[in-house]
Length: 335
Image (cartoon, rainbow, N blue to C red; front, side, top):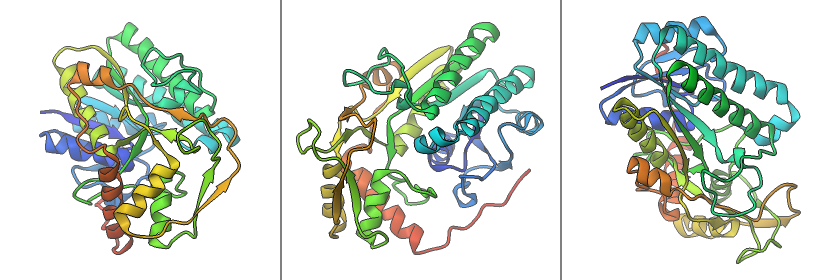
């Protein structure tokens, strides 16, 4: 059993990873500056309140907890914001990752699992997207994640790091026990925004374009349940601990759903009306992006237990109802 430092461990995906690690018998240590994460999401291990760019804080956490591995999820992740303020993304995502790698090289484990993104592929010419699809990011966010992928590969080659890189597609849903879930501010993801309409917190959902070459004219995307993503990290930790040295996998559902599929599924699960408004296309939105995740299945034995659309919607709805009707209890800070 391992002690695992989880950067961004108070965030949406990070908290689910911490829960999965704890369920597998590991000790997760959340390292988070709480700029986007939440105290109430830290429930399965201690919290180190620190910034990924602070070398002393990172070194202190690695040493104090004698971490055996690191799961690196801390990052800015808003595509639109990355184009308006690229300096924030190069500083936090890339400089922060370099600080982490240097701290690990100086006095820490050499086992790293990195949260990358399908945004590194940009506008893929063919779908489904495989790990061999050219990585041509069109956003600063995607470019910074690709830069970190290259940096990790260099450290693995030169300093003996064992590394797993996961390119997430659209993380969605919530913990089936409704203990944690998605609570971004601002919220840019489709499913929670459609659920907000169902709950009455929004008047309607905007549908950006209905004239794409898809069955109903709206964009098609790959949605993978966040708990299935978390399970992949546990599997990767086991594989790397047993001698595997380099893993790069897409994490997706390998099936696509359109915007209107999401709207209809939310209506079915919630029983609520979901008004929508067709607006102009957003520049750069491809018609279809779906993953080929068979490599993760073969390499890690990964299975998607929750990624059917009804489960994604129903777990997100249950979490949202619990979240909005109660105050999340904060965890105690631990420096």
